[in-house]
Amino acid sequence: MQEEYMGYYANFDEEQRLVCQNITRIEFDTTINQLETFTQPAKKLTELGAATGRYSIYYAQKGLEVTAVELVPELVSQLEDNAAEQGVELSIHEANVTDVHFVPDSSQDIVLILGPLYHIQNESDRQAVIKEAHRILKPNGVAAFAYISRFFVAGLLAKMSSALVTPLVLGELHETGLVTSKDVDAFFRTGYFATPAEVEDLAQSAGFNIEKHVATDGFGRYIGAEINSLSESEYQAWLQHHLLVCSEPSLLGSSNHGLVIARKHG
Image 1: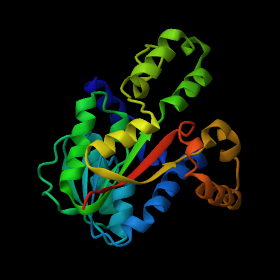
Image 2 (image 1 turned 135 degrees about the vertical axis):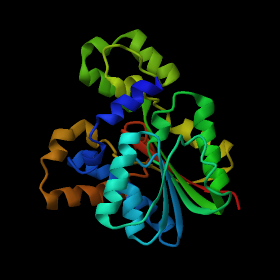
Image 3 (image 1 turned 180 degrees about the vertical axis):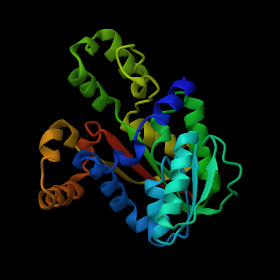
């Protein structure tokens, strides 16, 4: 399974994902907005699963000392190139985020986990990532955990193909958070799709207090064509509306991505 995951991201244009459409821009814009009050006073940030560095480079440009950890060699190469192109210094490590022993205990103000949780299918490995975040954070440090909602994915499967609307496929997703059907691409076969309550429980069981829980995309993916057709001024108006309502609990399950921001016990 890991080999299929590595192959998928070796050939996927992750660099452009967060900027190529309005419905993906909103993920980045919302995450940055919701983290602002926590990152402003911070000095040291580690991103676990940094991909090509969209977030790591952004925060390095803001003056933070950033450690970026990524497993896929092709993404690490892009990350290194992007950092050099932008003229920022990052501490970059090619490693599995379940073990970041090279980051000292209680050394970080912020830890970002904005992708790994929806590709780690083993529960003990998901717990290991959260425990590593807790270990490297200073007392009262803050972690951000992104996930993909299994409730959203059920609707997405129905939109993709009626052949996926079966008790077997939907039942597996509902019960396990997995989609193993041969009729989906590698992103889904290697994915893990959580419930909002599960991610809160995961954080709390590792010693975190929940500070915020937001619907990163809201219901925008259901009206994707309409959101993508907005002009820049219209997009900004939609974004401001979305930011007003993204903390509404009733939106969490219908959002593609959710974001839990949690603080380590002092």
